[in-house]
Image 1 (spheres, rainbow, N blue to C red):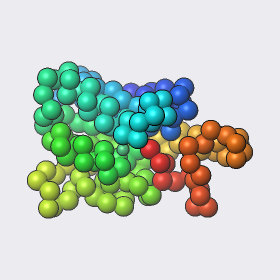
Image 2: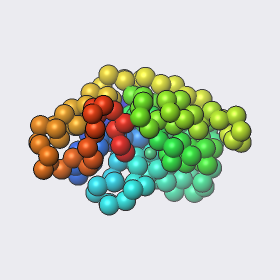
Image 3: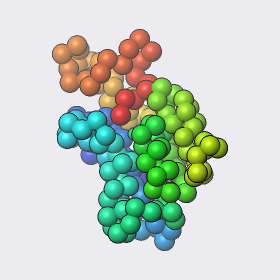
Length: 165
Ligand SMILES: [Zn+2]
């Protein structure tokens, strides 16, 4: 999770919402790293988890990552949880929960949907404080910047949750 947090912090360089992910092999080798690059690449699908899974699959030479663990600083969205299922990743470790868009139990539970053909073990709340602090500080900074700041989206009256990446 420390490595995922380092990736998340690096996303700040491109004004991206600070979310980071790594894919780890059973022996602890890091196969893939990713950080949110939605702003950097102008790509709505450039989420940390997808980029880390792609890098890991390239490293392995196969799409099937069925002995790997995905570690991510924020609960995956529906797209990323779908990608986890497609890669047959058996285990996800996440930092902060995302009450607005999380698909690992908060809004949806794609990772443990009984009607799908692959179920994932989920461990949540790892370094939760640090992971969510990074996001809250990011959105607080944008609010201080006023309406003309580079905020990617109005967080709305409910505040910064639903971290949007
Ligand atoms: Zn996502």
